[in-house]
Amino acid sequence: MKRILLVCGSGICTSTAVNQKVSKALDERGLKGQYKITQGKASEVAGQSSNYDLCISTTVLGGECHCPLIIGTQFLLGRNTEKLVDEIVEILSR
Image (cartoon, rainbow, N blue to C red):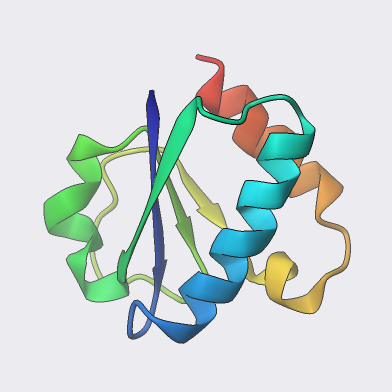
């Protein structure tokens, strides 16, 4: 099971919207049941990211990230997300 940390400023609104979009995209790529997404605050990334396979952030991070990081603001815009999904799939396949 691959672990994804999805963060925004508060860990609630934006990350919830992006969580739904990322989950749908990964499920459509045949990865249903192979990943788990945990939502959190951007301020928690430095302390928690070493426990994850990937971090997706919709905001600027103030500290270090100890796993691969993808900036996921394109999911909020709903445009040009295929390349991001390709990157996510590649990272999760490692």
